[in-house]
Length: 272
Image (cartoon, rainbow, N blue to C red; front, side, top):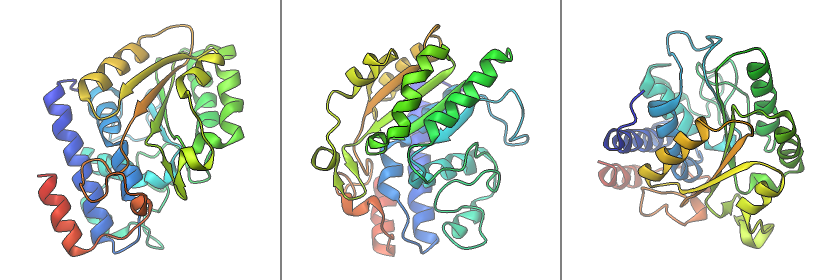
């Protein structure tokens, strides 16, 4: 693990390039923009904070990461590939029948994936169960759960939000990728969730906020979260959908879209 800011910023670019590459070489309509919005945070977690081992993906004392917004799977696949959980040639199998990189993460089909996700709203509850087991069996492992801000419309999320502080699972860290879009449009137009931080605070969580693209802020908030005791922590990360690729930023048409050769070339030049 390396928490050097410059290093983590470079790795976030590596992760973004992997997202664009697999969305292009697979020839499939994937979900690049939701993956790009959380790339900086996922890079910080895997390269700077999490205890994982590509040679032993299921080791008992590992930290767990749940991509509850499972449609953003390319961000997870990109970082797992770069860490050596599987070869880059697997990029071509993204969303292909029989491949091990499905459109949403599948456990244990893909090495390094800790939970099958895709049906939104389930990740926090499952992460809570993992965290409860780990904490009360004396293990030091952390559980990180990445949620989308559209996903928190789901009632099952708030059931887990409600009970987690009661159980004092301070090894559970939720991260809300607040990019202000969901599949059908703006979150503010579909089901407004203003005052996101205050909502979680009202349920008794330890609440932090950060610019989800400022690596200094991300590392600082993760340091606080991973060392906080007594309550679960949520980090509300303010992000831009499609961040890093100019023609995808703020454009919800890229929630799910195939990448052409011309678009691939432009994106990779911007991420060089």
